[in-house]
Amino acid sequence: MLLLRFGEFMLKGKNRARFEKRILRHVKEMLIPYPKVQLTKDFGRIYVELNGEPAKELLGALINVFGIASISPVKVAKSELENILEVSARFLKVIAPAPGTTFKVNARRVWKDFPHGSLEMNKLVSTPLLQGYPGLIVDMNTPQLELRVEIRQAQTYIFCENISAVGGFPLGTNGKAMLLLSGGIDSPVAGWSSMRRGLEVECIHFYSYPYTSELARQKVIDLTRVLSRYAGVIKLHLVPFTEVQTSFTGIGQDNLIITLMRRAMLRIATSLAEKEGALALVTGESLGQVASQTLPSMNVIGRATLLPLLRPLVMMDKSDIVELSKKIETYDLSILPYEDCCTLFVPKSPSTNPNLRIIDKIEATLPNYSSLLSAAVALTETLEITPYGNERPESEAGSEERMKEEWF
Ligand code: ATP
Ligand code: MG
Image (cartoon, rainbow, N blue to C red):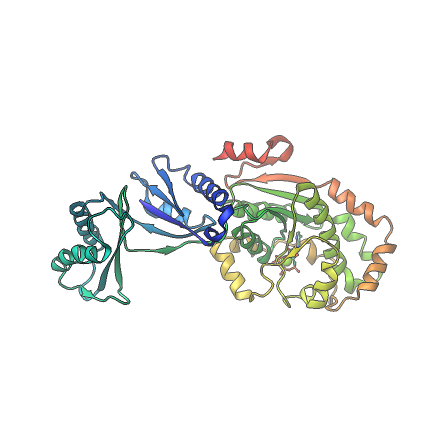
């Protein structure tokens, strides 16, 4: 079986039951394709009985469940000395340690009625193993192979690997945020980082048809689909941005267009957040990366919303962001060369130090500015994206809960 251990959220006393329930649900969803698997929840952990399902594949899926800190493949013995010795010997046979491997047994008697104590068990288990493998070298401090024997009342668990999993908080246990999702490398990584922190994420994408193509739109749907693998289902709001964007082009302040666009995006996103009950906005901004991400730019742009503006990547180096995007498998899509609305009408030298008073004045004098923004909100189209590619408009799809039941 696989032994799943929970992560840092274990510390949060009162919420623990809620968090554990959420994580169990997420694990169940991931295991739908493996019907023979059986789950048992214990304090701070979940046991996944494989019953013949492929261990490697399951491990690959479960390692991505938010809130799981580590996973050990374990062999199960009856909590009787004889059976423990037998299973340990079989286990070591499978591992087949090379001569010269340093080794120790680490037994832990959790069930206090078991007749042998932890220290005694170390000896009882290791002696026959060392006789069978004379090439093993005992090392009590930093052994290459540490055979752990955990004796509980119901069963004894024998394992030697402790594989790090994604960690973080169970999905959705820290509330909901709206992710501004472009087609670039950064924002999908920002979305994944937010989900890992326990946020439920809905995506918002701004497109400027016909200046941006159908392919660019499809790319964002595909990126959302990759993110949905980590969440089950994700809402994607597609906002028509052409009218808003073109309203900025005639004012003779081309170097401020990006600042104006970003502020418009935040305003629209704030309206959508209110509608959807989200309490924060998330972007893929990283300090200093481009003109709109200098500190003075962020200052002026950020003032367009009263919601907390979360920037999970703000202090990260690009190379680390790229590495993460490869790991979560959004990179290959992100580098497809379709244009983003932000690359349209972009001046040669966008301002790195926009003046808030001037920006305020321009926005105040733009004809029908607020109705342009509300029209964009009203014309927003919402899809529910799943890992399986069968998304439908929200109106046909029904509630999120029902969607989950249908798809998992
Ligand atoms: P990314 O790699 O995420 O595109 P970037 O480094 O290209 O980021 P910008 O293009 O300046 O940076 O965008 C900054 C942030 O603004 C993005 O990370 C994203 O959160 C948001 N954003 C930009 N364009 C769009 C868009 N068309 N739709 C939704 N959000 C967008
Ligand atoms: Mg971009």
